[in-house]
Image 1: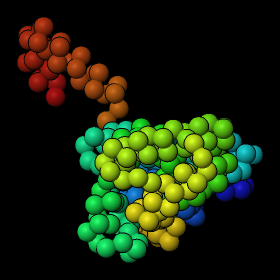
Image 2: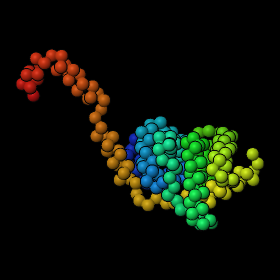
Image 3: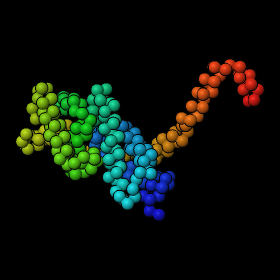
Image 4: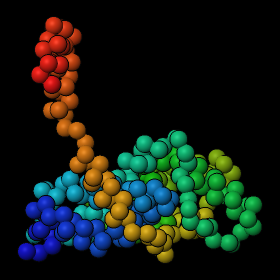
Length: 173
Length: 73
């Protein structure tokens, strides 16, 4: 029996094999949205936990386990952003590029993180994936379970809100 | 909104929030996953909690059954 069929039948060994095969890919996808190593690790486990719970609903004939996992991971990340919203601004474990002087760069980064925090979790996820990570719209649409046009609308809304917030803070993109 | 405006914002975002493309997972998360699965296995089912609640309510209403219950334990 194929690995996906065994997983759908509730085989724990098949689940472990899938976990080991996809954990890095899921983690990298989550890092693109939450940008924090500890949170991305927790959400990777949460993603596979949700996958394990839903094994009976998985159709092995569909075949694309990676796309299914990206969709679960995106929902888990958006749930996290929703619950952590207004508690802490968007964290960022990734080093900034050194094109500007450190103080000016830190200030700019702070303003951008603040502006990002104004976005709703669904729009923030799309803006990060589309503008920062330059993921194809089709891939983002699949991960969110929406159409490509809906992704474009969210990017447009996100850009409008970001430009407005940054302009109010004296940053003119 | 014009394309150059979106491109300018994109450049600003990418300069301040570098893409996470080169980030790699630093440790195996399977032990954490196993822990999560075990927690779920050890969780007391809701039916057991319902039975316990029924017993507590019965003992409060009929305290006379406490000695009988203790005798049978």
